[in-house]
Length: 180
Ligand code: 5GP
Image 1 (tube, rainbow, N blue to C red):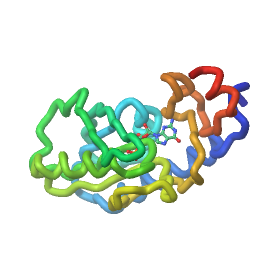
Image 2 (image 1 turned 180 degrees about the vertical axis):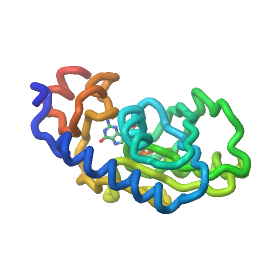
Image 3 (image 1 turned 90 degrees about the vertical axis):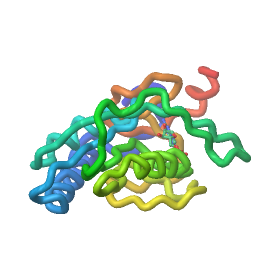
Image 4 (image 1 turned 30 degrees about the horizontal axis):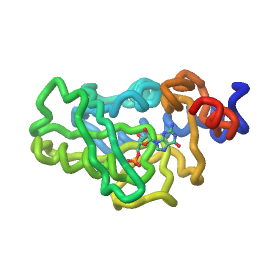
C-alpha cells in the first residue's frame, strides 16, 4: 500500500470484478447497437480503459474535460476545457465518470449532452458517494457505492498525483495537510 494512504477501500481484484460486471451489463443492455463512451477526463482513464475491454459491442470512444467550481454555496459552475471530437447526434451515449459526489458535474454533463441530440444518454460511474448528493442525477451504471471519504487511485487524484495506483484508497490526513 502507498505510504500516504490510511486504508485500501477497494482492492485491485474487487475493482476488476466490479468493472467486468458493468461491462457485461452494458453489453446485454445495448445488444445489437453501437455505443459511444464519453469519458470525463482525467479521472475516467483507468476505469474507461478496463471497462471498454469488457464491452462486447461496436464501441466509439470520445472524451470531454471539464472543470468544476463547487464552493460551499455554489450551485455548480462547470466549464468545458476539452470538447468532444465527433458529433453524438443519434448515438447511444454512455457518460463514463470516476465518481459522482455532489452530482453537479454530472448534472451539467447530462444537460450538455442532451443538447447534442443523442438517441440516448446514460451515466456510468465507477464510484458513487450518495451521502454528498446536491443534484439528483439518474445513474444507470455504478460499480461501487462508497462512504463520504476522500479517495484516490485508479484514475482519481489529489493535487494531480495517485492516479496510477491500481486500487482505491483513503488518503492520510497528514498527506492532505502536508501537501496544501
Ligand atoms: P461532483 O460534481 O459530483 O461533486 O464531483 C465530481 C468530481 O469531483 C469528480 O469527477 C472528482 O474529480 C471530484 N471528486 C469528488 N469526490 C472525490 C474523491 O473522493 N476523490 C477524488 N480524488 N476526487 C473526487
